[in-house]
Length: 71
Image 1 (spheres, rainbow, N blue to C red):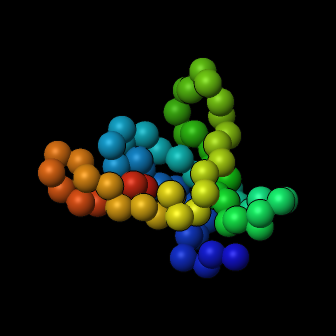
Image 2 (image 1 turned 90 degrees about the vertical axis):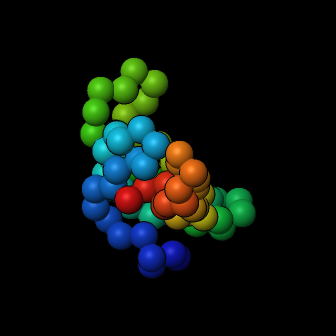
């Protein structure tokens, strides 16, 4: 399991929305590391989200600057 991602609150670098990482999980078929996180703002689509751990940690470019997707 990926130990680099800690339980806690993160900000999405692009939107500024805050999320709480609830837990880390494994995909039942592929054993891929997943991050389960909760939107800490009103979101009509869903309160909880799942993203592959590698995507959660990904470096993205925002306004020409490289940064972590979640900070």
